[in-house]
Image (cartoon, rainbow over all chains, first blue to last red; front, top):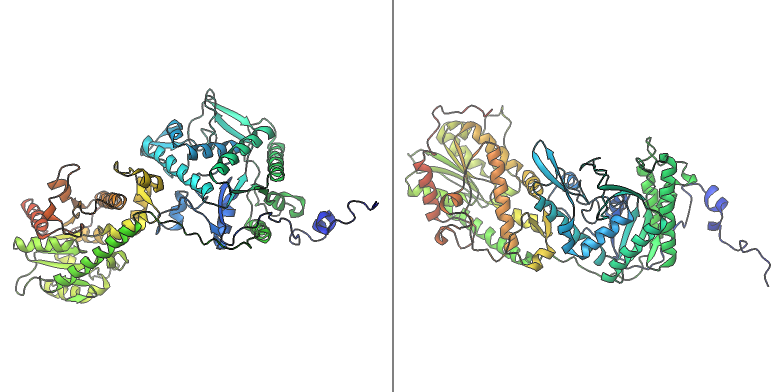
Length: 363
Length: 259
């Protein structure tokens, strides 16, 4: 029987001094190792709170197979596309801050009949009345001119969101908040508190909810079960946003409220990763917010994460991925009528040129 | 004279033009219409592909030269000599333009990922509906603004100097089986026309003039390619404009800039 301490044979990465204190924030190694061996051309989709945008951008810039299920029309300049919230996440959902929102989007994606029941806000502007889906009220810069168009946008994004979990290998979701607002009658979540950026607050209809561990875990498990029923090979990679709360409606000081929110989300993410082989946790929260960083990656407002922090996070992300399985060589399908359109335009071009020549012959 | 698929057709010698036609392949039918009505017309025409490639240049205001498609420069210089102006649009002649409505390539780019402009057509199949991406009216307008900015700049320039009428091409039934593509062409065309009207330009839509809502122009007014008007179309359109006095030259030669 060995009398050696269980710690005696642990690797250096298990000890704070050798793995953290001595090497410093930029010397940490093997911080995360993906448990999955993915194909070289593995597809990734990204959603969640605003920190998830950094993951989208990093995957694209590194040439990874980031799946954009609701892209902008080709030729639209990037800055214009971003005004319409294209290219931010893998579909035009806007930020998905809470587990409740994620579950709601998943149900919407799988049951189009639910679209008709979604709440649409209206507001009077200088240009007239505009309409915004309560689930993603700021995806269109000026709202929509009709309720039908707002609902059409929601339906389109729900279809794209479905593709984002049925056609991907890895669904990356960044948990942002425990606090949120829901409709008192239907329980449907809002993306933001009505009356802040859009909508009108009504204390009789709008209910504050600070979700606790059991509710968050249940919502995530339900969402993932629905997704995997549609795509049994789906991997889910959870992260927790290190960005503190802008404000809390909990009644607490915003600092402990932030700690409650982030630690609850971190605990749920860790437990889910530990309980299911298809779920993993990537420690972006720790890289930015834990003591080794000494808050150096936060901007002067102590909320926004500076680019250097994002870069370090993504270095660990890419270092920990295992893409050693053979590529599957999957092609993104073109619209069904694409070939017919190409042929039609070739004929049109030919006619245009013929007409030019004909006209130049002295008409 | 042809220049890489571009052309300029001037009236016969000794007969000065009474109007200038500017545009892409859609002005050919209008030129034929002018000839049918005995109207001498100078035609500055280049394939829509060249227009789409952004080869339109509006010179700075202090340079009193005609805005050109570079490949048409020799033809424009000849026309400058004929009209006696260093900028052909200082002639004050009425201008008919069909610019920016070469929408086939525009619609292909717009729909390459599956976008369909809102509202979708009712006869869209369930399969097409499921694979389509939503595109709001505001997105279509932003797309048009970006893709057609040089065209709008040229028309604005011309409108400051000449009586300008912009004419929409025929809305044709012959590609109707490609529902999404055809629908996007129609919406892009309508959005371009709306933008032009917002600029204060006179926009003439033969489809609205000669066909009722939801109806299409007569079959023989549209070429087999499904996009271009025929001589019959051009003759009817020009005839209607003549009857309304839309082709009369400017009284003062040069118009004041629009406020």
